[in-house]
Image 1 (tube, rainbow, N blue to C red):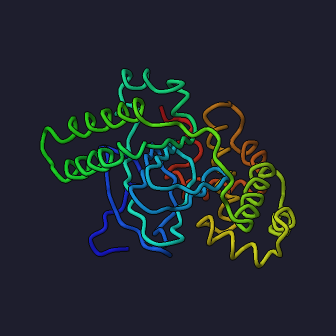
Image 2: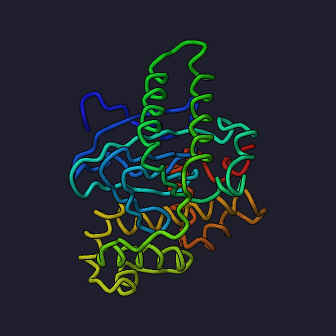
Length: 279
């Protein structure tokens, strides 16, 4: 991590965050991302690879990726240099007027989206991000509404000029497809008592090789990722059902309710009971 690099916020977001950075081949993220706000990622030049929701995507110059809250994602830079722009924001920052103009409206914000800026508009997009980064460094009474206005203008430009990619071509190497198989097996069987050997068998790898490859591709170890998926499902059930916390823990694959409570508090910052009571 560079000496002057600013880390994106990981907890609650109290203001729009914007950053531009140049990543070199082999750059390792300081921490995998999973947060309570939206992330808009734009590749200005070069390419990178995303692991998102049990899938791999190669993103090229001119590509935007919109990532909803609480979606695990990890980025790798496999060749050359990549200049990328990132904006973190809440749905309220977009405003209802802009959301109504999005394709599929509110549904557009509920899933990972990839859209592409035509070549002739890419310089304008890069300039717009530069304005947001500059504005983020200003701290006065106008900076917050100015950032919102710039974010809304950016989305309006994308609505008008960008092309939504709905059929992503298969550009992923075979080894990464095997990692995707392992991640999908975890997502399908998180409620069962699965082992690293079970996951490795589903991917067609030995447990030791899969463990090394999974961490380098996903940013987490297999057990960490399995726990993350289980906790995410448990968090959803806590706010959508009235079931006992112990029952939810067991149903989501935890065999020890105390371990579940400790892991839940470590990830979400509050106990399962307090999480359920949040507005």
